[in-house]
Length: 216
Image 1 (cartoon, rainbow, N blue to C red):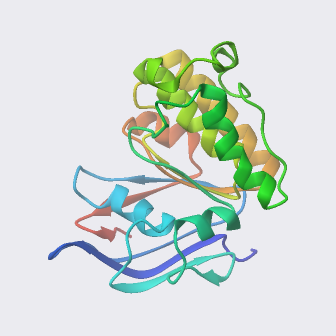
Image 2 (cartoon, rainbow, N blue to C red; image 1 turned 180 degrees about the vertical axis):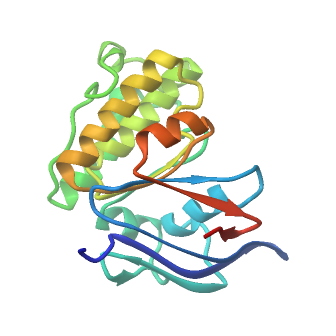
């Protein structure tokens, strides 16, 4: 088997004095979707934040394609090809849908990667491309945030509750698009998903995080 795209070794991380992660170790290979499951407060979102660069671990190593990431910030990790969907989705409300998408796609252009097109996953966004993102519904903002991640053509995708605010039809469309992307790009994905059934259906493996440790 080839070397994993993502490796975490003995990650500890805390908010202020409260330790959340207590030695998380895991790996994700090319073409693989891994779902990280666990109760609220178990450290799932914290794990993604550490990988994305939003939270520095107090101990342990994060590697991406063999590169140690601990000293790199969020922009450097994005340029390497790490895409991150934060919980609740994040868009710029005063910019149009297209302007939001183009900002995300610039990461792919700057790195010489092929970029996606607006509406590849959710065609209705193309029809609203000139509307301010702040005027979209909660579900539509989530769709835009998701498309902004894939606009970067990432080789490592971190998804924090991607189906949040989406109805069943759009969730199914997202998961089908997502599986196709992973299959053809040979990217890797670590996903936190509130819908356990959806997570188990779309993923190749599931990992259980309990009290800041991956259960074996």
